[in-house]
Length: 272
Ligand code: A3P
Image 1: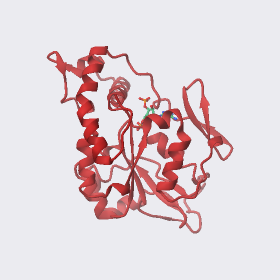
Image 2: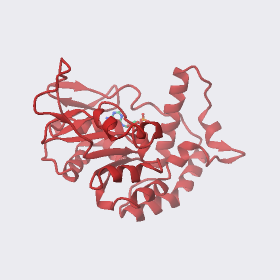
Image 3: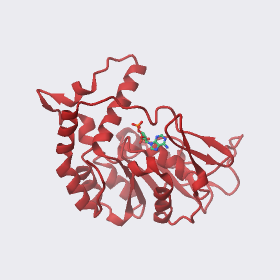
Image 4: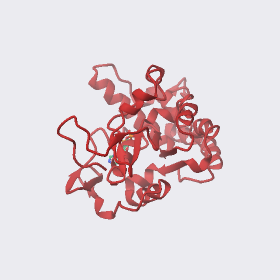
């Protein structure tokens, strides 16, 4: 929510860097960037500029909490600091480490249909590899192995939300984890943002006029402080078509995991 970048290295008077009061823990490709940028509309929010990877990368965690704190944005005492690192959700060590830093932290988890997430994850890797002049594989070649679903594929494993959320529930009560419906955030962002404001106990400041639909991008963009901006072109890419029998196999593979997840979090989603 800090609209101007300080022209010098001098921090604005009255601000300081503080460890986060809230973290967007994932999931990768769930809409984590959109959620952070949309929350940053709020004047009571100070968002970290980059993905910090403190709790999921051992070499960063070894640098200590002071290293982490210095990567946080300057904030006013009335603001809450938020960082997002999508890798935390699937990291086995992140829950205990975050709990050790701040046991009352509020966690934000944005999820979307696990099958959609797999295809989005594949698409991101595909474009990253193209940019780095590395060989790429067709989507069916990574999803299928020996005629069956390649369930060891990392992108499929990351979509087993029940498996990952269990680790978090060992360390945090459910009421400290707010789940944002990433499919709804795409279609109609305001109600999801209003639920997050309530969860974070922020005064309601995000309004309908903060969003406008951009026909060219095919997604909502942000209007704030008299400026309009859409997310980077890597957000909201077209997905490759997937053979319907492979899609069916993905849906049936995720079905029981999704049911387990609904039971664990006491809420259902309209996933396949
Ligand atoms: P796709 O590019 O596969 O469509 P993350 O930031 O966690 O990597 O998530 C990226 C996803 O955010 C995109 O996946 C897109 O669907 C989703 N998203 C949600 N709201 C968006 C918005 N307003 N603009 C662009 N992408 C958005």
